[in-house]
Length: 271
Image (cartoon, rainbow, N blue to C red; front, side, top):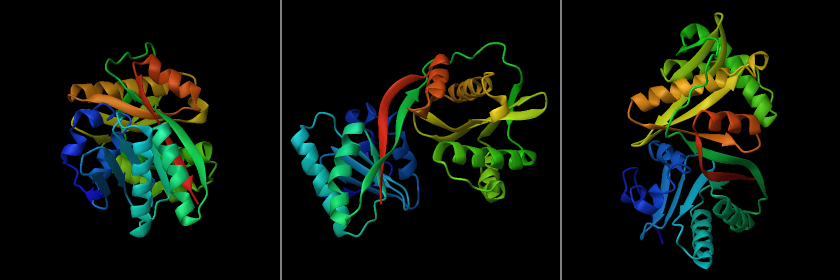
């Protein structure tokens, strides 16, 4: 039987979950949302969390036998279906995401596909690259159009979706106005960006890392992420981020500046 819980619940403070908290960092962000849907089992061995329109996240205590995990996944899928809660996808460890992707879609007549494989990283010690031209600064209002162009380009490269730069102006403005978006400037040109997306009790997550096509392979993103990581460390937290497993250049760059693999997350989409 599943029960609702709030963000400060003890389930997110127990040793079993904390051992996986880097890989499952997004659950903390979901729990901070006003539109969250967070469920757990009474014995704190399962967590399911989602926000409307986004994939759910599934965690189970690692010590559970496989047969118990499957039973819990089926119970969760059944309860979500009976309560009419739309689930458009699932994220979790490769095993758990794959398990839920097998048991939920048959209830709704949907199909499933593996959307992305992510590696979660934490950075206990930052190793900044040397002799990279340029400098970091916070994004400013005058950067909004360039940031919107970066968002549109990333959407095209990562997802194959072509969007107009103008349509990304509101998202870019929100990122700039948050005060958490940093850019790398070389010879007065904005060449790369990275943001601090969310902070928890122990970690700060970096996202929106992007470098313009004409400025790549010059170390700008590595230098920027390292500087942002140093800012995070100065604030008493450990940097973390997610990287697409199928982007070897990004994974290598993160490892070179001190990020250590901390678990994989697979996301399946249902349609």
